[in-house]
Image 1 (cartoon, rainbow, N blue to C red):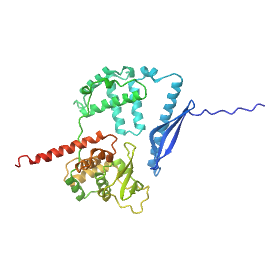
Image 2 (image 1 turned 90 degrees about the vertical axis):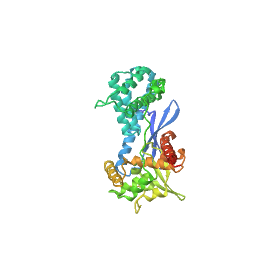
Image 3 (image 1 turned 45 degrees about the horizontal axis):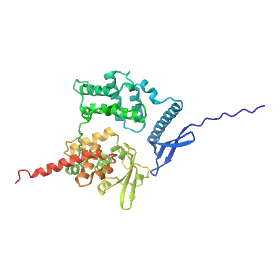
Image 4 (image 1 turned 180 degrees about the vertical axis):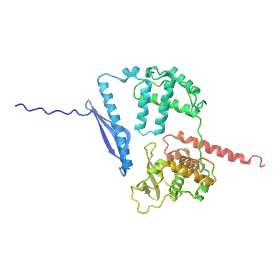
Length: 381
C-alpha cells in the first residue's frame, strides 16, 4: 500500500520578525524572501512592555496593523510576479477609495486620530467637489486647481467662508495622499507639484501661546486643585514634553548619566527615542519616588477633560487670561530656551522635532520680543 504523501505547507514569502531594542521595546520588521534573495523592511511599529491592560491592548492593535501591512505586501508581490502592475490598475482606482486607504494607513501606523478625522472630512469635500466616481488617472493639475477654487469658496454650516487654516488642512490631506500614491507607484507623479506655489492654499503662519517668566512664577505661587496636574504641567514648562509623553513616563525611564539626569522618551507622536536632559527646575517638579517600581508611572494624572478644567481654574486663580493648555507649557519651554540663548538646532533636538523648520516659529517669537525690547528706549532721550 502506497504511503500517503504529506501535504507540503507553502512557505510564506514574507514573515513578521521582531528586533529587541535597548529601551525594552520590540521593533517589527518584514523578512522578505523571494527568488533566493532576502531583504528586510522595518515598519516603524513597536511592541512595548506589557505592564497593564492598556499596553496589552496597544500591542494587539500594533500587531493587527503589522499583519495588515504584511498581507498587502504579499498581494503586491504576487501581483508583480503575475504581471499585474500597479500602473495597469491605476486608471480603475477611485480617488475616494485611495483617500480612505490612506486614512486607514495613517491611523494604523501611529498618526494622530485628529489627522485621521481631518482626512475623512477632506474626503467629504472631495465628493462635494466632483463626486465619488473620479479615478486616480483623472486627478490632474486641472482637477487640483479646481479643488483649490472650491475650497477657497466653501462655506461652513453657518454660511460663513471656511477659515484658511481649515481649507489648507484639507488641501494638505489631498497632497499627502497623492505623495503616498507616488511612493506606492499608483501614480507616476503628484500633479500638485505642477501648480505654482502662489496658487496653492497655504497654512497661515501659526501663533504659539506661551507663558512669561512672571506668569510661571504666578502659577508656582498659586494653589491648584490637583497637585499631580500642577507638578506635571510645571515639569513640562521646564522640559518641553507633550502631555502624552508625560503620561507614559515611568520611573525606569529616569536615568542618571554621570551627574546628569535624563528622561528616556519614546515620543508618542514620532515613535523616536529621545534621551532628554532634565534641569534642576524640571526635577524639582517630579514627585517623590518612594517605593515605586521602575514600571510605575511618575505622574498619576486624571483624565484629560478634567486636566483641562483644572488648568483653566488654576490659570484664572493665578491672574492669567491666556488659554492655558499642556501645549502652552511646551511652547513656554521652547520660547524660554531660545530667549536664554540656546541655538535653534539644540532647541529643536530638545523638543524632539524631526525638522528644524518646525522650531523656527519660536525663533520668530523671540525675534519679535527682541524688537519690542529694543524699541522700549524710543522717546526716552
